[in-house]
Amino acid sequence: MATHAYSILTIVWKGVSRKIFRNVVLILAVALLVALLVFALLFNKAVEEDIEAAAKKLGADIVLVPIEAKSTAEEFILESRIKSFYMDKSIFESVRALPDIKQITYHVYLNTLPSGCCSIDAGQVIAFNQEEDFVVRSWLETGPDRLAAGQVYVGSYVYDFLGLIDTASLFGQGVKVVGHLEQTGTGIDHGIFMRLEDLDQISTEATGGYTPGNISIIFIRVKTGVDPAKVVRDIREINPRIGIMTRGDIGADVRSTLRDITRVFSVTISISSLLALLLAWTTFTVLANERRREVGILRAIGAHRSHIMKLFLTEAMLISAMGGLIGVGLGHYLLYYLAEDFSLLSRLGASTPLTSGNILIGLAAMAAGMAVCLIGAAIPVIRLANMEPLVAIKEE
Image 1 (cartoon, rainbow, N blue to C red):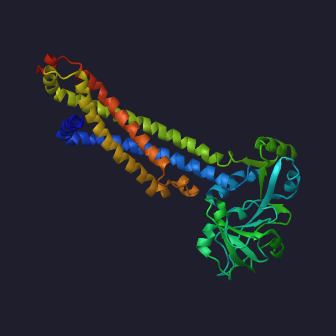
Image 2 (cartoon, rainbow, N blue to C red):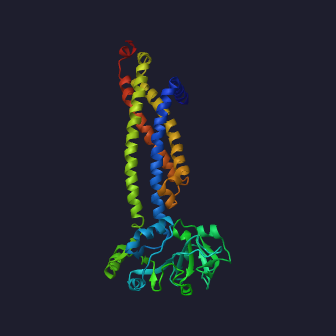
């Protein structure tokens, strides 16, 4: 059995190498199709996973922001862009009384102002309530569990930029960086976290527009078994003008953009598939005409139709497999090394590590490319295999 398979592969390889340039063209067509499939699938997967991960890492089921700041808040959560927006704290007080809420906390976003060589100006300043917090300290990697006056935590990005130093100043006040957070892949990484109580030590002018009694964002965890949609309805009854995002809503604009991009990919892939199929059909039609006499002789000495089909389709499979392997490598290369040129990936910080899921995507794309090539090759091969031996041998 192994000898028989080896003999077939030897014959097939001779057939492939006989017209190497023509077959290389088909290999490249399959490679480009597979590369496009791999790139499109990994691109979509990377963006979706980043959005889902960012929403989960916040630890909240529901997020409340000023209605006019929903897109701005998403930019901070998903893209780590420094933002500031405000609403009245009375909204927090009214919502926290709802019976289905398990935990609730809020943050105040402040913009830093340059004030000398030792100012912190590399991130979003966030004042948080230590008593009710479940967003910040759950990511604390080093440092005390509670901040004292004049102490701050920093996110992972700011820590890489700043480190734990004693000479920093914030809004003209001396601060001590006493701890840093793990990397989350969200706007938290760009945060500088201070106590709410320390806001009283900062002048209104220095905070860049913040006024006492305002907050920026509210994070809510609902009780186990409670549908977040019910809590959303209750919140809307209290304040219909508040901006509400659930985990599934975060990144809605990005998902809409991703759907548009996916449609473009779908059209491009469909056209590429059709071109690859036509090229395979043309290549094997020419091949069938060139080797018709050879096939007629094989049929005359006892070869069955299945033998002829196996021989030629194995040749098509070998060509498409080579193209598929090149395409998988090319598709990963495009995403790994050119991702920063794609705004959506670079803004989200989306990555595509070599995981079992990504390997399966590569194999699936390779199988699809091979299937297109085999379908195109099968049409002339079936016609050739069904020819009568004498007709096949007869030369024009």
